[in-house]
Image (cartoon, rainbow, N blue to C red; front, side, top):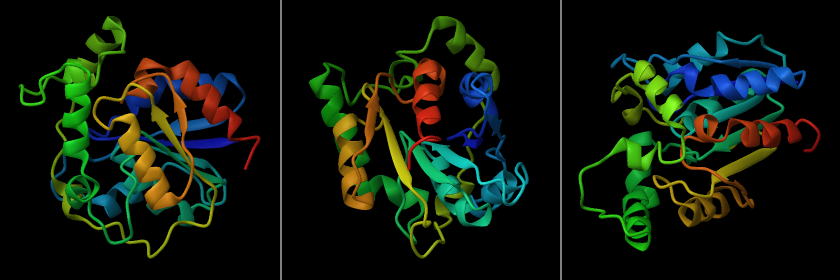
Length: 227
């Protein structure tokens, strides 16, 4: 099977590199893409164009979007006859919603703050990416990530998700049990309210492709054999 792996904020294909290698080792074709995340003039449609340029129409890939990449993943599905759409710790959109609107309409900040309090972290403290994103990522990978750290422009946050309805493909939601940015119960609620589906939960935080690539690749592989 073919996989199209779409990164989240920062747009670096590198975030998927370990999962990509695992999928290829299992006999699949997989491609991860760089998005023009540092280009202020690029929005979701430009991100989708970049993604489409990486695959051949009709290859029927499983399209996987990480976090912000969910908006792009959903948009490309009808163009390439996708087999499935998979959100990984995803910003599950609604038709017409912009990524900028998503935060308030979903209540992400309130959910994150409540989760921080439950876990004994100060929700009013300074933002620390190591605490929020890399708490379950090895020190070696976290150091490597410093060389793949691009600033995310605000370009996509004002561009609407333009599909009038969900793509007519099986949709899956994968959640990291220990995600501190999009907490577990918050993501479960979104999956139920916006998609009406039960998500799959695996160990790991927000950056599952870096922290738990083997477990994530195993789950993605399983979607090639089930609807």
